[in-house]
Length: 248
Image (tube, rainbow, N blue to C red; front, side):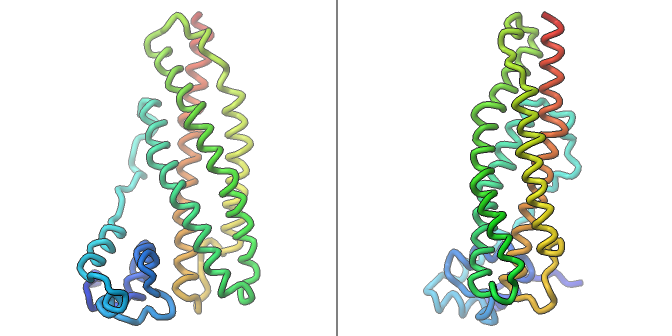
């Protein structure tokens, strides 16, 4: 199969269909990719007074594939590095992806609420996530991750002050793992049910498809994000705590 090549003659709708991430660029410049998407990129740019070559470059940047993390040996990483990875990759991604997904759902419902009334629940779920997830991540960044790094340093260097340092991570971590993370898991499960696992109907418009793609992208990232914390980072830190308490 011949690879899809984007150039000035490509239709806007075809570009978005090929890679939904390009929709962010079109939205940025108010280029209609849904109902008016049968314009060529060149004509769409001329209509908006934009430089076609610059928009092409921006589109290509938006569609660059990131390196898959499926083969990374997270369990072998130093937990300081893992905490930084979670913060800089997953927290930063979610800080951008969650508002974007929420915005796409709101925009979609503006024109399709009557046709797809079941999707109104998505708006409620995402609003709750917008309210709960940012303070959850801030608590990890300001309190839990720095404490994990302190514990790791004490464990590696067998510091004599370790027993004084330990404030028992288990309780706040269990609150995160069993409470807040469990809530996010239930919310994702419900989103999957509403969207039929992100499968749009056959007659879905481009906006409908992109909305589902945005939600699925957020879902995939959150699943790995929570896995890294619940199954690797937090258990390792708790094990270090236990060992330090037994040593002194």
